[in-house]
Length: 343
Image (cartoon, rainbow, N blue to C red; front, side, top):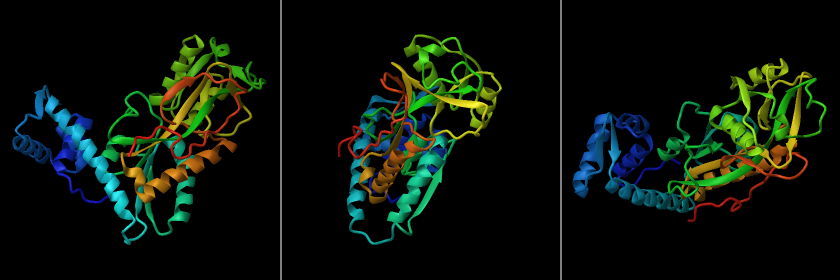
């Protein structure tokens, strides 16, 4: 899957610089020295006879000429991914390697079952699965350290028309309320979100997506949540809720301690908070056999996950209007169900 570029590597350096914003971070991402990065870009600028970088404090700023060059570089790299994928059918050098990075919530409940399925299709393949919690997953795709990134898009996520990446919707996941036993909602079969306007809330889960989902959903329901405590680990969140310190939204992929002190209550009505889980790959990369089959395995695992304690996320963090009982309906997404980038 790694392959060697037949495209000027300095274009890749410029693309990564556009993503990271600094020469130092670019060097770290590409396993180069900062002086090598600077030298590459100076020579590229001289050969093209255009200025690519301008100093901006302790950072550098891309010039309009650099932005134009990056647009062309994105097109070249996407076409190269397609070429590599097409040539794979003519090679006989083993089953290959696939490297997947994923948000923690989806790794055990979605990515691992998908990999089990993929291994049955491609015996002998090698693979990597990881959360990479401190890393920029999109940068890892760009630098070819990973082949698929399973993410919950949030502000700052590349938009759907980003020339560097394809986006493949895997699943949509409504959220439930997690309340303590004895709570006024505990005996209900469902609750509308606006009914919880006077409740005390926890900022539960990853603040980059889960808390944004809470605030946007509550705004859509006509109130601002009173948030007191916060925790990221679902065991700690369960303890806070069980102790009566607040209620929270609970994603259906999240695993937490089973307890008679906790009750999961489906949300229904006009506003049902929903997360979407998306598989990102380099543009053109979905034609590569292992990436193509990896996405297929993820879609199939996602379609099967609704029967247990699971659901999923994808695409963007949003609150959606949704009629119905609030019961979870997994959304299996076959190829083409999500607007993919052409080519």
